[in-house]
Length: 140
Image (tube, rainbow, N blue to C red):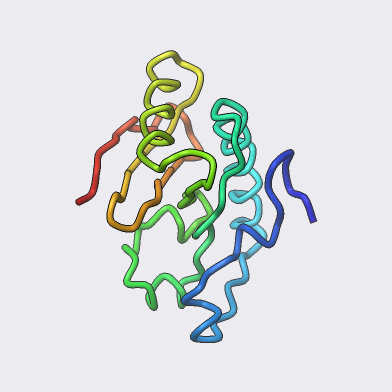
């Protein structure tokens, strides 16, 4: 089921680790609301980039977050972060273009992290845009 212009509900709970370990990655009502909020923010990024994005990780239940050794305060834990890549654009270019859009005032984020070895970009948000730190860096 579509939850936004570009994203499907299945994408929000996808996890190779979760599937392998048979972890149920089911969000609560509040977490679902956060996922919808994040989807609306991701739609803006998708439109700016003009390419499809493949989701590696979005929401992580507490059990899944522990299994992947995620931070206890990870935005993924609350449905407020997404890890993506694309077959149409390099992850480095996605990272650079999102920074470009942030500088232009088109897109806002809390965290933007490029992982070159794993070839994906992490995009994190806050529910209150005024609290977003607009931090970005390359990890590795």
